[in-house]
Length: 128
Image 1: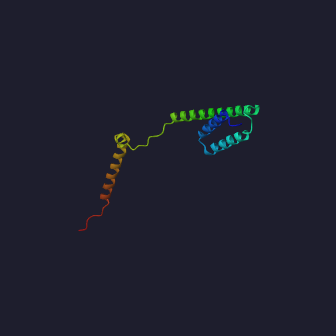
Image 2: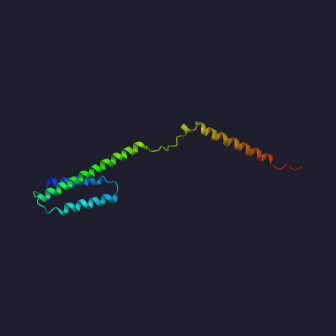
Image 3: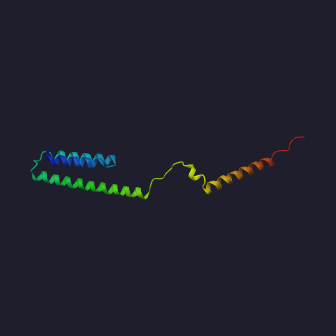
């Protein structure tokens, strides 16, 4: 394919679509494949049948790649909505009044009192 406006537009569309690929190695592979395909066909006359077939083939491939990326983005969006990110903020005002924390705090205080009482019971008697 010679550098006709349609071929250049198609090449740029391919590159824009490739930039949206998330995986680095896959993105590099598609970039090399696209660049080599356009280089292989650059000797063709723009009005030839071979150039027309090559442009249509490239257009079909880029459309399928864009469709795949659109489906992948939709799937990621759906998964994000199903599983919202956990909020790990340390807001203690909301949890300090919860019954489970109060019960835990109360049980800790009781166990501390019992330990103090036991220590007093086992202390040796004073010397006369």
